[in-house]
Image (tube, rainbow, N blue to C red; front, side, top):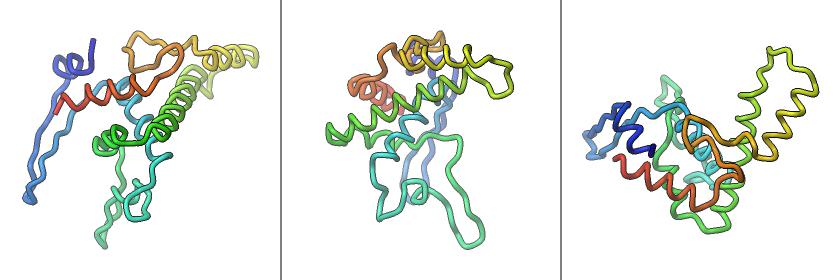
Length: 165
């Protein structure tokens, strides 16, 4: 099932306009898709410098003299789309960072801190994750591939996201 089919059949979206003339959309996505895009967003932040010398998180945060706020539990589509205009070396760095982040997330998911796993069981899971044998998931292809993502895979998923709005 593609992201477009997954979102169209099970999730809602909202399109909005602002008084400044901006148009945007808020699209609810399944948790496994969110995990992929959150890791991609984090990877892009690690490689790309923010606007005006700020980190991207600072640029997107709110400060109005009375309140401070940061972006949470959402994906910044503008930042994700920035991947499409990066140079090939920067795309490669982002994809390497993405693969490392997803492997680490998979390890954390499999090894919960409160479990009574033995050292040998923990080592076995870590070896499996590092070898790539635990990358596939029933949720969808967004959980990873046996050998990690390629630039083409990431571009394909971003193009799929762009078709939603």
